[in-house]
Length: 75
Image 1 (cartoon, rainbow, N blue to C red):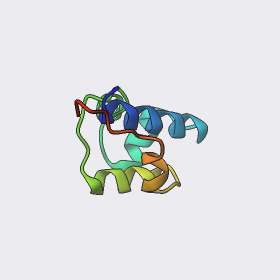
Image 2: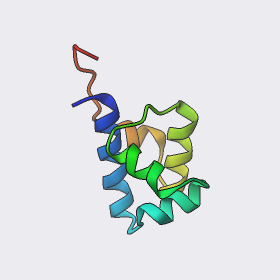
Image 3: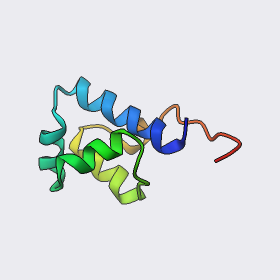
């Protein structure tokens, strides 16, 4: 699993735990639901500021979103 896929999975798990839809998260971030969908699918590379914005929108920390992500030898 790539770093982006791992991060996307963490974002999705946190969003669901918050009881938030992709649309609601997108609204909090000022973006589109399709962008959130792509993030959760691991189809987008994220900048640090985007990870921080996601964390704020999900009432968590960037460190929490990055927790458990393992760098694979082919990454």
